[in-house]
Image (tube, rainbow, N blue to C red; front, side):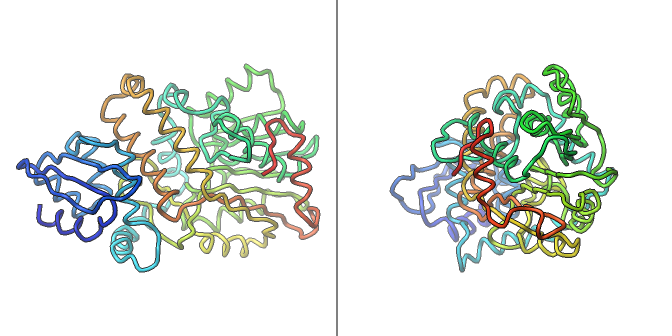
Length: 408
């Protein structure tokens, strides 16, 4: 416990953290903090404590999954919130920066996503049992940041508002050809077709998502929406509009130039593209090793400073950037709460270890948007500077008239 004790005494200063060690001794870290209840955990053995001390994210995540780190007071969200609050993004936090440096080399290697590896990485997360996603997602199955405009109070309304918000930025017209890169279960593609009459092609690398997207589109009787199992780099043709929501995080830093070159190649001369992605306000970083191993292999949320050079080199105009700061935190919290309410159902679909993994994932993701530098950005791109109106007013005008549209 020496390394463990030394590490946690160094950085847990705010909030009470109690650890019952393998001998039964209670070790206390931090200090009482208004509005934050104490968190108490039990550690099974010395090997677990050592693993956490040497690699906190991976060690703690695996220990929680395996039942070697047990919550006795508070839940996993309370534990990770307390820890990440003490490691929050702020100037002069030496422990935070030391922990991130550990992961950066491995994170760069993990981001190499050639076509075959990309498909394998996508299957790791998105080809899970469909019943799992039905337990916590909205009817559109939007597995990305919702848009919590004023007056929006439910996840269902917030996801509908997100679809309208993006549709307004695309400035759609009937008869247009739209490409949805990383279409998920097809909710965005179906929405865009319904509100505009555009012909939409959705592409994905997930066989499970493809099957659902096609089946649901057929069930709704839509004929203007098509889905293909294909890597974005292999798509051909010209499209008036290109949209990509929640997929860019899986591109991999070494492939940003190829991604935006592909967007430029596929986009019509007077076309518009909209990229919605998680990003970092705190500059280049690394995906933590637990998330990279168990949740999103090959995934990385970039800083804008890492995205923009590839946009510039693709000769694309960046016509609008919107930063959504806490929208994903609100979204993930609803997902987490719904999964907590349906713990028995999730364990029945998979098992108890998977349940603990899933709750750890959602809790740590929420913390990234509340205590770390994570945010969401929507980047609008064109080939020509005069493709869109000179001011943003047209977005609000269109949004007001769309199903679910709420102007914030």
